[in-house]
Length: 128
Length: 128
DNA sequence: CTGGATCCGGTACGATACTG
DNA sequence: CAGTATCGTACCGGATCCAG
Image (tube, chains in turn orange, cyan, blue, red):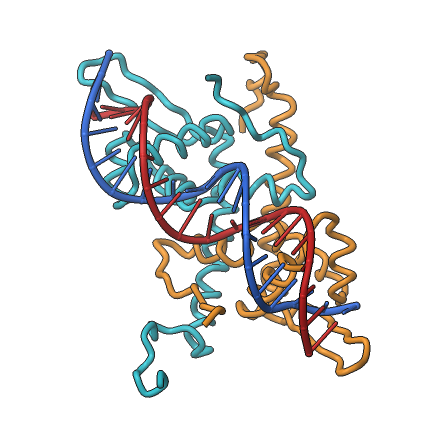
């Protein structure tokens, strides 16, 4: 009962569903790391400095429930668990790419627009 | 009390920036509505049943600060304010489209996998 | 090594009343 | 009409300790 699946809300728009699945602070980074290689729990944690094991577990479980990643447990001592993208999980990569690309444009624009002042030069003549 | 601009955190990945800008519960819907037409405050509110004016104001301000939408005030009585996408704001539409498309695929897959349906309250035989 | 349990603070989100 | 003010709630994300 502790593990309520709370994905049964209906969305006003599929965008909401997507954000619910790949959104949050860590999920994009996890997916990004699994893009090229399968990784172990500790491997993921090392590459995401600052995440607590609890959070990492939670994010991984949610991604697993959504069917995006595969959790493979090796019955060994000490335990070993490998995470990898499922075939369906790979279909989000282009979406992630689009988000990343637009984010770069946005950050670029943020810098040149000068947040700390109304520095509006006649630079927007290059619209479009 | 000055309005703290909290967008100056540095991101581990541009994806985070994008999610920060277009993420949340309402921002995609707002952008989606402004895709084809400019709308007034009340117009937006009517199409988003359940949003409080406070929330709508907040989301609109954030989108405006990010440079995605334009807020045009007509000095009339009664007051009239129109919101529209900026040229830069229109560049997110493809991203939004990608999110929407993948979300549809995801929701489709969710249904056929039989895992999450409208099966909110299981039958009582499982309780015990 | 891979997590689960517990507590806790910040913030996203919401309902309602009021104002220029 | 287009918001602001105030209060309240839920949940995300973090720290720490504990367990198989």
